[in-house]
Image (cartoon, rainbow, N blue to C red):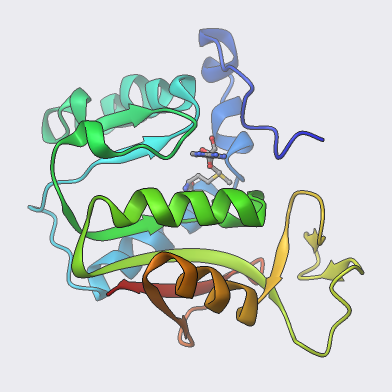
Length: 201
Ligand SMILES: C[S@@+](CC[C@H](N)C(=O)[O-])C[C@H]1O[C@@H](n2cnc3c(N)ncnc32)[C@H](O)[C@@H]1O
């Protein structure tokens, strides 16, 4: 079974018709703004250096060549700050990070991929560094194998994308990979994704 649909390549025609925007979840302005204000709340500044990572080079290209160009922001982000691979390998950035954010990533990943992501992140995150990731959660009392209605738009599943987890699953993964994790309670996502804060020990 394929983990998710993100192996799809987006050619220039697809990008011109905006398919890259819908493929990463739609609600472009609303969710973009939400992420922007969230990172500001965590203390990040517009003048800080930002890096981006994805499995799909064509999505990074659409982001750089189309989205950043349209808003005249290309000069703020060297192209070398965007990296694609399928192993979460961020070592090629050749630096450590204080903060990381994965918005709507773990909602598309299996437990093993989430664990791999945390292991790879631990190689590039400062001690005490914070990693924020959104997930779909269910309660311990909910049957893990049943589908779960997260919002009017989204049903989550144990074994297919979009995936749901228990907070205790995330605690277990954090323990295995050198992180502590907590639920950020004051986060309000329109599709009921929850925000987790992983702190690297
Ligand atoms: C729902 S989109 C969210 C994109 C962006 N974070 C946002 O909030 O707009 C999921 C993103 O995760 C990427 N992705 C999926 N599986 C991945 C993996 N194994 N490694 C790295 N990125 C992955 C996809 O290519 C896609 O860009």
